[in-house]
Length: 574
Image 1 (tube, one colour):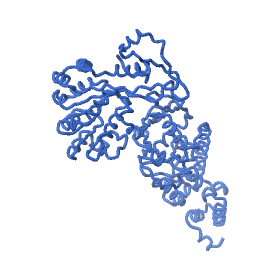
Image 2: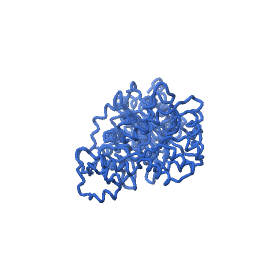
Image 3: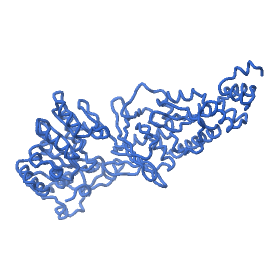
Image 4: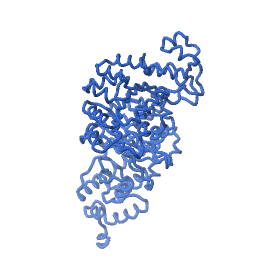
């Protein structure tokens, strides 16, 4: 070949010829045939021209000043293939290696393959950096990933996810309806479609939480439905890293961080008018990352107070105190007892243009239009107490504190309740009377508790009996019912029901109903608080004044046929 033709060779081809690794004729011919066969230049040289891949990689490394990475030493299970469409990986003969922050490192054997980096950046929205690897090793890694994808397809072949095509999933609670570029092909990958299907199935089933759990020899996905965990599916164990990677990508977490817990959020847009949020948390365990998603349906905060299960007199008390201009309402109970829904229902009732409402939450679970919601962040010094101080300078009418955890927060909340503001908050206690003693034990003066707290709601959630299959429990003796705590008045005209189970329900139950102990701080209870009475004395005084405790409230729901005696015994103790 003449010098003119040789002079036309530039970039990597010219360097290879200059180093005598190939001839000029080979270079020109290889470029033509690689284009015809839709292969990359380096790939063609190694596969078709038998050019030594190691020598080629070392020369490329020197020529472009890039370190040569040994991709064979990398665990392919940790490669974030879920980030990039499989079609792009195949098209550009490039493999994503590591996602860290806003950088995606992509393995290539030809650093002049700028089109690969630009297109991957365009489709992922993440800045890309080239990592030089040997062509032979890159080919093997790509083959392993392809085999893994095939195995994934086989392992998930039982799941029909064809209805997922119209689902819009976004990270961080934001969706972009106009950004459809590349989404269709990315959603075709089995791991993406499987995760999407799990989320949809959980919503359809009415689950409150989804657990992705890796173990030594197995992997399982469980749903918490009506308060009970149930195993739904067991994907292949080797998919654990990929499922974790996909969920972390969706939640905008750091995919490379596997040693520390992380928090994130996903929004799934089911239709133009309905979206479901997922609060996501990862936890490093012995055999991988366990990931739990809490399902947050904004519709649950707008059910209306009539749907929550309050007895008529309890509902009247709650509404009456909500309409008072100042004071404190405390909602208490264990995690998952429905405290958030009770609070949000109250906030929706109060949410009118005449009121300025501010909330401090950790985290903000459901977005409420017209309410100023603050996500506390201890890392930057924004805790509940600091948020409350700021609220008091914002001319508030109603303040909601996600949880009173310490004396400082309690004192500021009580001060707000005493100075013309309505304050709503939660504590983690078992009963209304224990809520009073918890505040006293924190160090809040008894006078401040007695003068500021207006109402305490202790609550649980009981599984609701299926109306289709429940049957009368005729085998329970009358004396046994009395021993359980029923009174003759409660049993008059009542029919105790038991679960059976049918295709319409889950083991005889469908949905949940609230069980409430609602105690108004009357003058006699306030006097007892001032005298620093203990929780048993306060509870006895509340019963004497006609306030039903959780046990009686649960038995009333049993007598009304809403739940079973077994369920009442599960959530309350006499």
